[in-house]
Length: 73
Image (cartoon, rainbow, N blue to C red; front, side, top):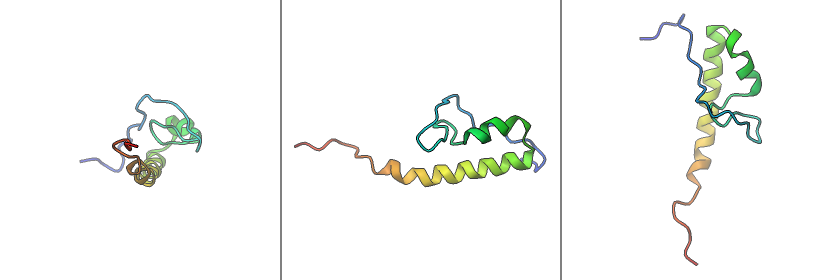
C-alpha cells in the first residue's frame, strides 16, 4: 500500500521527444513539468501524474481510429 507521504516515481520511460503539442511522447509531461520534477513536492508530483493520466486518456481514442488493415483498392 502506498502512503500519501511516499514520493511518486517519475513517469519517464526514456523516450524523450516533444510532439507538436509540446508534450513528451514518452511520458506525456510538458517541458515545465519535466524540469520541475526533481524539486517538486510529493503532492505536486501526484498532481502532475494526474494530469499525465488525463492526457493519456484523452489521447487514447485517437489511437483507436487508426485502421488495422490497409484498404485493398
